[in-house]
Image 1: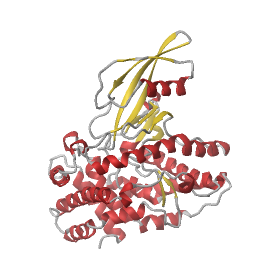
Image 2: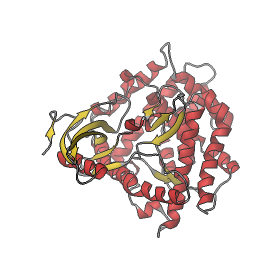
Image 3: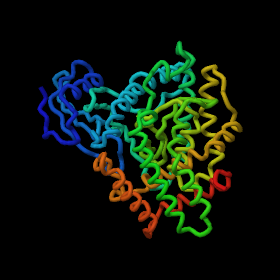
Image 4: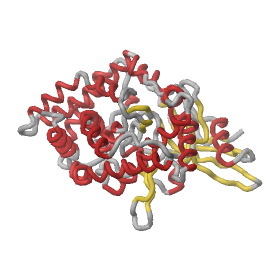
Length: 424
């Protein structure tokens, strides 16, 4: 047995010799012998929310030589909040299934038509035991991938890499469906369900979080002259915002693909050349992949991760970049392209309300400093309202700092929505 190097803590309590050993053998080969392992935390507050993410440094021998390997571990946070904790097992099963089964099937099809595979980490071990869920994945830092500063607005070169990857992901999901007996990913793999769609406690939790974030946006905009109608619009939509999210997380749209579902700064890693230019991107965190309209990913990404001027100046090029990637994969796979670039523009505009609501929820999270980050570990069934009130205060306080980044982002987004006729 391996000698575990530290006592059980919140960051390693679900890791075992067995799970680490399985990952090692799946990665290096069956002849690898686990000697020891230890947890080495590398994330900071605000980098992760739903899961604990840490790294595991593994000492092993292979053919008589002593070697070392590092993996990234994603583990169940074990929330004190019942409705949140109940949702986590299906989330881990979905992500593991996407990593182990669905993405590899799509990658095989991409390789057959001469395209590079979808940029994700390799997964080496999954454990779905309820309350002890663990995924052990490739540590992409070893290949020099790193996170973009989430508080900086993403620039065009980074954005185009992401949009190309999303186009490839979406198109590959359509190629995969053509090979399935059901012709439907959600019927072949029944992992794309969300408890908060049907569970009243889960729905109330998300409703309270979403309402709190939107009220924060409304309170901030109250201080801005001539935006009273924006405040009125936010508060009018606040109470049924969860229903709007549910609509976009359904599979009732004309054009549907498998989307990433949570495409923002924290779930992207980039590799750079010697000149410092981004040359490759990895999509991480596949926990909320789902089948819906592709503009869910596009709206979510463009209204969570950008300063307004960059988004506005490059918008036409951004959608063109995505559509070129999407259509080139489908054409190479001899599949029809379901919509033109012009139709994509129209669909994006029609569904901008999703981008606006996502932006109001996400921007305070994206721009939070460590002291402002919502701490789900502190949330219980009895203190949800209190935590959300405290969160509302923090969001409003963010907009009152000298180096405020939040209010300008909100202003740019709301001006965009006014121009598009979403808010009137």
